[in-house]
Image (spheres, rainbow, N blue to C red):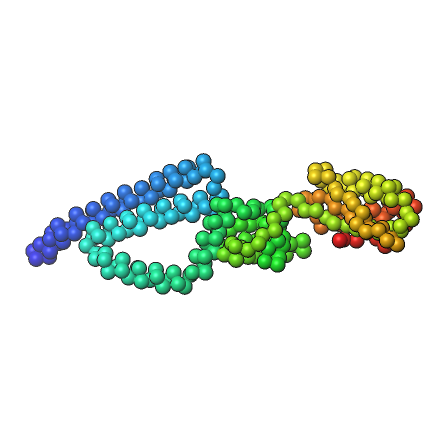
Length: 259
């Protein structure tokens, strides 16, 4: 009889609390999913990068989940104030421990929002250079011509001088000929070789100019190339120019070389 009375008293004292907590949890989870989906659809209509959208959606869902958890614990009679104070102390300690990561995160959000550069562009900064292959929330990855990877923490990028090449680079070559050589015929031959290359961009047009005149004449050749073609174009243009000059019976002082 006594056990029955205890069970009835427990059901009366805690039954409604458990039902209320369960109802709050169900409503909170539904609200979390609905709000996340609503924010995701809203952000899809904005020009935000995927990392930013995912972070915003995750933050909204996390906030609703936290509020739901606090409401459930309060409904069950758990003292929230000491718990919140304890979480605050833990959060402060984690903040100091993770301040480097937080700095990279904030810088990553700035980069994805302000777009000082984009994936596929060629950059030079912090003494390194390469094509941007990934812009993450914590780091940015560059791939230099040797196909290695350079991973730069985002906070080191903000505030630094950034040389942005974009999606094309200008290749600088030099052709040295004797001062007695027919200059116009040489320029025509070199221009035809360069413009005939499928890797050389038609616009902007290649730049050709005489750099120095002495016992020899130095011709500077600067065609524009897509980022992916910059390295192989050097290997193709060098022998093509030499072969054309030989056919024209123009003797270069050595093979064309990079500026």
